[in-house]
Length: 297
Ligand code: AMP
Figure 1 (tube, rainbow, N blue to C red):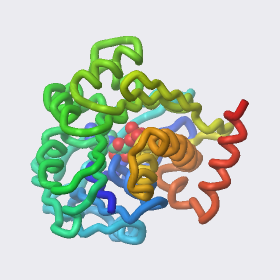
Figure 2 (cartoon, rainbow, N blue to C red):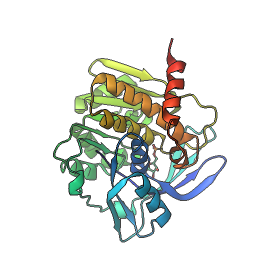
Figure 3 (cartoon, helix red, strand yellow):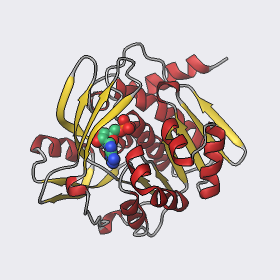
């Protein structure tokens, strides 16, 4: 089993063509639903009493939600706006609400999880949560500029405690205070991460392990409508694939990253979670085949 911890949100997303208000989002939501294509996935997250029942139903359809707490107060809200290129997003508002003082607990049934993903979330909560698992074989974390600017020391401490970091290129630079991505990765490895995966949006990713560098291309798409959650879908697919294989050897890590690129591509083709929810049996395998053909030479 895989456990995913992180934000479950009501997002307001502004793209040049459309504004979505209070739609189901959050880093853990995207990651866990993406992962659920590969393995049984348990979610640990918190929402407020305002969390709509239809969103609760979506979560319970795809995930084990025994780790989902409903607390008094408002659900975490994020408001972001994309420019015309759809590759730059500015954050207009981050309202932590019930996430602020959340004291996450790991349900007994999740405690044996060998794979744990700490999705984008308060790094202090992530640190205290990972300590509660008894048999972790592979753990991974992500973060975002909000946490780097407010709790940088804790972000570094969290990186020390996990096997792998997935982070996007701009955040990697912001966190490490380096400009070259190889230098960024080396710094995070010095802090203690064995694997560093730097996501480059539509351009794919770079994976670093020891002295190995593994670059991958993004899955080329002509029509992108909403990139929200692409990075989380990437990470969820990656760790979901590894949890399914119960293996973290380098060859599987590389394959997992390819699945990450492919699931990220499904996420950006539709608004909000729709892209992930529309995936049907066989769609992923089909796209993996096309991807293989695209990059082979
Ligand atoms: P991504 O597009 O991969 O960066 O992920 C976007 C998701 O991250 C959105 O659904 C947001 O709800 C969530 N998010 C944005 N800011 C934060 C934050 N500071 N902490 C946790 N989750 C966040």
